[in-house]
Structure formats: C-alpha cells, structure tokens
Image 1 (cartoon, rainbow, N blue to C red):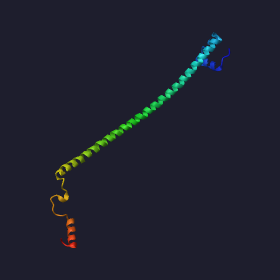
Image 2: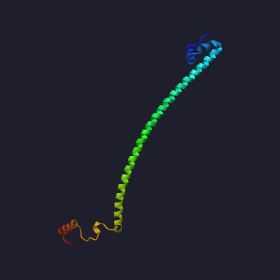
Image 3: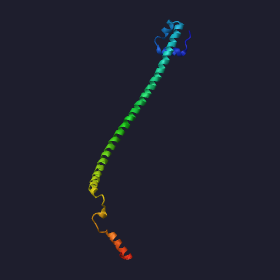
Image 4: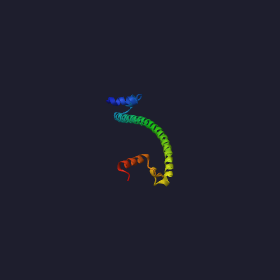
Length: 142
C-alpha cells in the first residue's frame, strides 16, 4: 500500500498520535477512503480559513470606515453649531434693521405724495435759485 506524501502529511498533521494505528488497522480501501475524507476535510478547513481571513479584513475595513465617518460626523456637528450661531447673529442684526425700516415706513406712509423738495417749501434751493438768476441775466427776465 503506497501512500501519497501529501495525504501522509495531512494525516500526520491532523492525526499526529494516531496516524500509524489508523493505517495499520484499516484495509487499503478503507484507508484510501479515510485519506480522501481527511483530504476533503483539510480542503474545507483551508477554505474556511481563507474565508475567515477575508471576513476579518472586511471587519477591519468596516471599523476603519466607522472611525472615519464618526470623525466626519463630529466635524459636521461642529460646523452646524458654528453656522447656527452665525445664523442667530445675522437674524438679530436683520431684526434690528427691519425695526428701523418698519419705523421709517410707518412714518412715511401718510406722506406718499411728498418728497424733500415739495414738503411745504416754496423756496427753491440755493443751487436752483442761483441757476435761475444766471438764466434771467443771460436771457432777460420774462
């Protein structure tokens, strides 16, 4: 009965204390079936180990992403707090100017048809009076 070296190594690694008693007590067919089962078991364990390594790597990547997103969330929360404070300051300033505007609008509501030149003043401004005087000197008084 010739045993392949790979299978002997599998048996030696999986069943180190019982390799020789197993090979002596089983017939060739039984031993070959046992070796085939042991080979399949070794392949499955190896595949499981590779799967475990992949899952471990995925877990490490997910943990790194969680740390990155947590830091990003903290930065965003600080920015929201800063922008909220800025909004409150700008809103207070807007309310101040809106108060001045509303007061001026209420004061001018009854004088909609007036402007600075027509508010009870029949005199011309100094500039207009001078211009009128120059016109009369040049063209004669009409």
